[in-house]
Length: 294
Image (cartoon, rainbow, N blue to C red; front, side, top):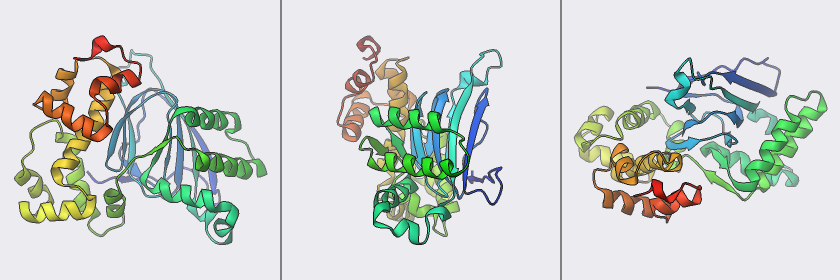
């Protein structure tokens, strides 16, 4: 599935825009737009897709997406039950990258913001106290007009630039492919993996999706992601496993199979390689009771 180009519903002469969404569930599918986006989740939870990153999101999450970076916030299935009474609510700040082109962005005082905007091309998730501080500022200054709209955005970006608690989401390989001539081919492979990651996938099968021989596909994939196909698939499965671990609704032995690892010891080995933690330690980090583990 090719990402949908989203035309944001703002006046063409507005370089900074604020948008609050309050729905039973988020409705925008896998999409991209030229504007840089800052998103603060007020209510709701589910799965976050940013480039080739997959992970869970929760209330209070704050992320920044650079221009043209495909992304989607997909609510969990209970939000699609009309009787659930659940809501998906967020505050979004959109601004056009042209705002920071020319002399302004080259000022020495803008060095931090210049680096932040470059990092945002892979998506940034803020964590810890930095996340809380940024979310509070967004809520407090949301939708102000006049010159305050500009000064508040600069203050917000400086706050983000100085934060040392954050995670980069998409891989270098994915963001390079976004601007390449064969992005449609790569995206077909990516969407195939998103749909089938929890099933056994043969190399010949995914190579056929790309229209390549297995040998050519391995070379093609490694050039664009800097990872082997097996490494990439394991990372995708680990991303989903993290979400299930935090939810704490199933045993580790069960969820390892849910995300495509048929061998529990292999899942634990791959999880530790990716996170430097055992699955049970990861749960403990997020306050999940140990009885939820193996």
